[in-house]
Length: 145
Image: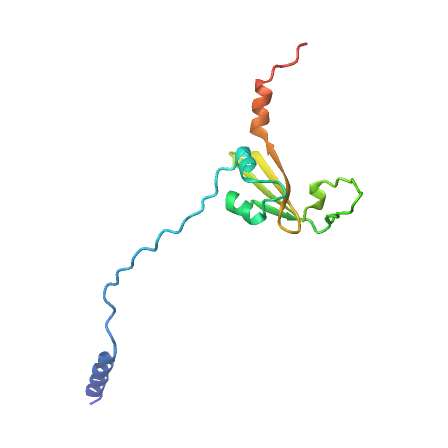
């Protein structure tokens, strides 16, 4: 009797179970526009950045995300006082310094530092290109003895 009840319960429960869905064709997602980080070069920085106009959003759009960001909590605020001719370096006014670099092997031949103010505009940038300075020193004539 127990077996008959058990079989009846199994038969009833198996009728409640549904079959696995048929083979569903999944369309591959449309390839999103992958924004690859462009090859960092001094020429690319010179072409894409305008001091005092380019914003950090435009910087990310043209060069990708920075390798590091340095915050300056003790920066000198930008003061527009008429009659003063004091020139404060952008490094001191900047709220953040964004660093981009290119690594080749164990060397870092290119380093670019962007100085960004509190409004998100690039005040200035500095490019340190070891490869270019090495080529210049090789091609320049040595001083006569």
